[in-house]
Image 1 (cartoon, one colour):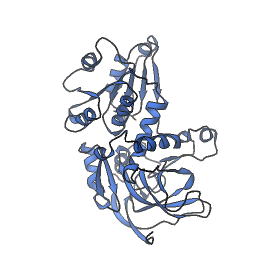
Image 2 (cartoon, rainbow, N blue to C red):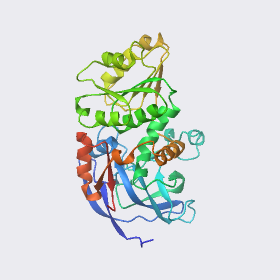
Image 3 (cartoon, rainbow, N blue to C red):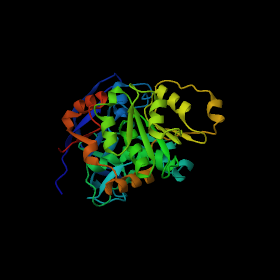
Image 4 (cartoon, helix red, strand yellow):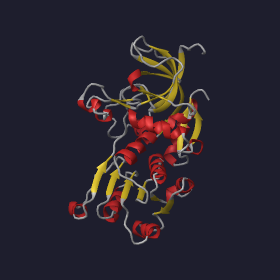
Length: 350
């Protein structure tokens, strides 16, 4: 194994001012007693990173300065004396990290810990050459999965939690997915693999890349700029209403469509976060016995499931990922914001 350098490059949020970010030279961190030093192989860029860059509402707790990035995989190159993983292990980091001792953490819902910390927000993240992480927050990568490909585990774990843990989907279930971003596409893929009949709904902005990509994943699509949701649903499912609606867009009209179109006894699972309040008339769901569920992030078990799915080829990682050098992180962010890529991945050593 190569010697660990003393300096590295990292993409850092410098102040609380919007867009005050830069790729800068930093010291390589040293792991504490229960920490591991991970050489980052790949780090995904997502909408949360854009919110952090812009200092949007909800990011007031962000530590400043901080290296951004929470979707990363890499290889352990140094370990503290009490760390449990070994040097040379390929790992991914759980991005939302609980205290480990509270009732929620002990019950397997560490992402709901009252004292949770988020990589790339409260502690330095993976948009750098190296990052240190407590060993209990790392999940081993199975054999046969490449280190850059493993960086897709974080968004896939979110879809795993939403589709496989928070929602009941069986062969023949009629599923609508709104929002064909990375999470929505991964959720649609999981539902399709589970045997569901899937319809992905997007807008005109999705027609160049994301809706065609969804079709390559094996699911039907419709552009809501050309056709109403009700008409698209009838075209896909006939007279039958959807059994399940996975809302991954964060758009208020999409939630309204879900409330209006979900079938009796169905379930709406909300994966996205919203910038605006959502209003609906409770009897519209109550009188159809509809379940309204919310799915937030994921725990280590969902990461493990995601990694095993990636290793078996359920998700075509090569098609999902567009790779960038670390110094090109601003370009990656711009491409994510413009919808020019499905999933941007920064490769610090590439």
